[in-house]
Image (cartoon, rainbow, N blue to C red; front, side):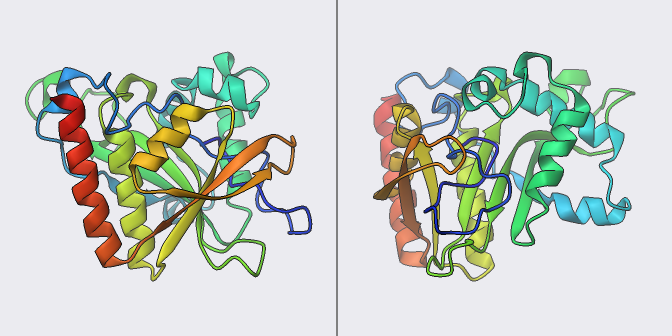
Length: 260
């Protein structure tokens, strides 16, 4: 996960932004991780609700509402260490709202790109049962992460969508949300008629490779990213119903083994 789409062959037209390979920061939510928090061992919450950012922009004359932009800036800032590695921002430890807005708008310049906001019910214990802070954004659910997808690859010979970014709030790493978000994105792509999905991981991030491998992704190629020439591993996962059921069973077994 890196804030962009994916690496591609030099002869391919450039996808939106696309300076590096996608990878989750530090593999925070791998079901097989031996470092899972005690909370992750309880019954997991339901998958997050996915909200297309393009829909919200259309409802607000193409601009991000200020409360939402504050949430997104907080999400990105909570992953400053990750963005320091990717180089997406001049100073990820001092992110500005306009930098986050510019980055997201650049992603959506490609007609096949979509930013999916992941929301979960707010924790009632934070402000009393069922209550929200007076200055909370006008959303009944909190933003816990996002994913950026590209449903049409710029290379016409590649028929699969790509996951370019999978980002979970830094305070929620190692809570299982990364794997649940990945599953929700896969279900969203499957419901859109896709039978497979691809992404790429920097070879310098073995934890990310483990994260995606545990979720059923397999390496199919090695390339360099377009902007910086860094080596990446391209991964693929089939999204047929049979493969999904098998992956869910394997993921459950991996989680049980890790928590035993």
